[in-house]
Length: 334
Image (tube, rainbow, N blue to C red):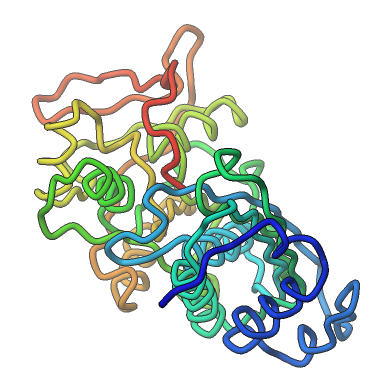
């Protein structure tokens, strides 16, 4: 029978030691973590370092296609990949609620271990805290990630009019899957959560002139494009019919009254590439399992005074402005 987390598991004594050594260390072990020191001492690297931090609060913590642990590692390494950084090490800390099921923790830890193996970056440091019953929701995860950039860092500052916009696959899969699981909608939805570095690495090595990459997590594709347009002063024009959305995702979004362009993805990215490089980039992406359904979805243009930062050319031809959402429609999604 599965055990339950008690406050003493976070107290630093015998139960903490047993939890770490029996539940966390076996699936996550590596030469750095095995030291169980106050900090991990890593080997020197060649190249500029990239550093990121994140927190993950998905509900339910286990969903079709992934779990909280897998999501946490993928989300962290994907943030590194978006600046062209190869992930090399992560930290992983859990906030557990008193009464949480140890079987859930085993699932979450196994998911984190699987993601680390897929991307080739170990968890080298970690921590566990326990809060009283009712002060949390089973388990939260906070992370940090370290990567190395060996080429020119990607940046929105490189964008210019004429750049082409691609998406690496169908959008909205993760958000729709989590929401369907939360509301008992059933169906065959599976989250898109995946570590993106292998696909990004292939794109960067292809010779395509990549200016910027972004993963459309909270807020989805529309929010990412809005933020890019605001930072650059340019205009992003998307083509509605070119943006891949699975029929099952669209069906869930219609039931819940949501727009898939504002729903989180956890295994997709938007690529902004130089004018004339879109088709070459598309061929590269479609040659990898994670990018087989990639598509060209828009362009970057000059923005005239008074124009909307982001517009969607609808299936009927007119342009529809895409603004930021004013509320929090999708709580605890990632």
